[in-house]
Length: 354
Image 1 (spheres, rainbow, N blue to C red):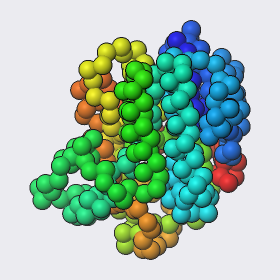
Image 2: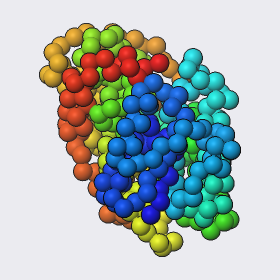
Image 3: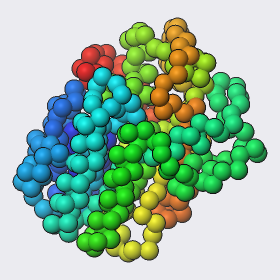
Image 4: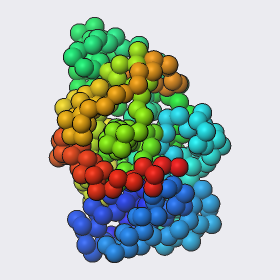
């Protein structure tokens, strides 16, 4: 099996490469990365694990054309920030070129080489309006939906399912991923290659790069330990907003199953996430950090930001039913892994935060 991973020197891409190579030592695992993010250079060491890395940009068709043929493409290259196009880190055109036009180039690659395609999409394809209007209550140190009052298609006490609304607005970031999903499905249907779309919740683990947009759990732990300023932004500045989290090793496990499956009778889109049991508010995350690293102050900032949602937890029951997928890494295990990495790499934020 030959597997091409885009964004292979990123946190998720590199983790997938290692996991797939470990599970299938005979596989030819290679990838492409433009190395534009601080920290990505450190993942060139994948070569020591037998993984080949090509320096190139999937936005550039000629770079993609130079790649060898693969049996499968895992598209892990993206600008992952929901604020992309609004912040000072990227323009709207850069966002669209990275997250949509790059995907088009990889779909053309799949068409030419009859390669299967696995798209890593996002929970942020789900409609902001309905999610923002879900009635919430404060339960302990977090927000919790008022489940008995909610009658919304695609929402249950397990979280947000695949048939929840994807109507605009979903953010520019979310819309590029949603458009990529649609194009991937159309290319697969038109040209006869398999396509799987995994809508991922928050991924976290050791070696994740040091910005809040790329991974709030990892950033929070590193910043807490190094005494960097931290803020509870929006929703009254209390830190009650909730996200679920899972580990890229669990993502790799389902990707391996998808690449090995030759049928055409399974749903093409699945949520993958930590779920209710692997969810945590920022305030609860601060409690965890205080127990590990000692207490400190977090600034309260009630200023609202675009696209913020108080509670995002995905329902991954479809992946469990269809693929037998289970989340193997519990929340405390993931946080402990990040904490260990923070203690071993005290300068990580300076090395990886542009």
